[in-house]
Image (cartoon, rainbow, N blue to C red; front, side, top):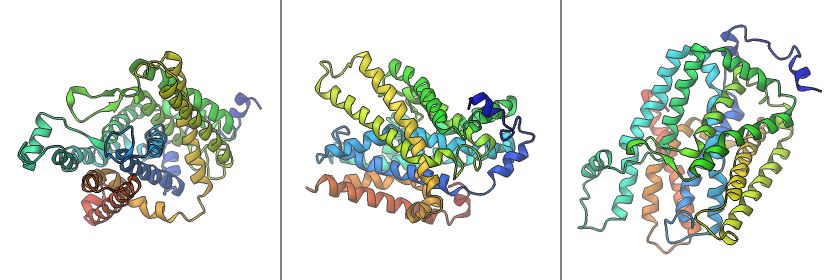
Length: 407
């Protein structure tokens, strides 16, 4: 069936009659999407826990090459997927609250935690690194002095909080479109809704869009460059600026008509083909590994790989990111009726874990640095300790009503 013929069916709304429709469609929690968000948060903690024991990370002297594969896997998709998930709920929130109230809520839920992160959480976390790399008697170990030096002279790290400011900016842009060009969301939503029974066409379109919004920036800036204006703690990976923004607005489009009956319907065509998306993701990741192997063993100039290699790597990374997004959604939508206790239990604390985990993470890495333990034992201690401590701390903080409304 032609896509244009399918799109003309009555099942696709020709226009959104009122924003109250979005309000109704967004009411109530959608468990699979909550689980997907908790899963990505868990991957963030895993990623940061393991990176110190990789050859890539150059951290602890105890390393294992397999951990590099974990980091490569995560880094190639998980933050783009987080922006995609974040965009899903924006249309419903805008419909319920309006642009001004929506932005006020985002400032409270994103802006305030970001400020707390860069002024309090990150200095406490990185104080452990400062003590680790400065011998006694060679530096001023007073924390207040260290804190003042951090925010005045730098370096002033943002850690994982960079996601918050980037998401806040994207939310502000979305609110502007909602106010001044509201039909943009409607049109985008209808285009995505039209693909709800054409999962392979949707997948192909997502692959193409992912390549178009990522590859040029990668070829221009490379994948290791960070946009870090004035040394302030508002960095973002330069090559992925449009990738993150694009996924966010695709998420808005997917949520603009209906999250429950659209392309992410629990029993929809996308969900039924979960194994296909998984196979594609595995194939694309295999291609990335092959290019990494070629980079280390076959290319004459390691520091400046040829254009063909950079192009191929950029294409495969974009395709892997797209395939993993489909896989994550499809797997959790398919298991919607199954019990997934860890992720369900983590749901209410996931945001707090994301915000707080850098403190136990870096301090635990500092604690296990000297003992002659295997990289597996060190990783296990850091990961389990980081997740447990940040989870418990979040649960305690959420007992404070004001904090609970924020995280």
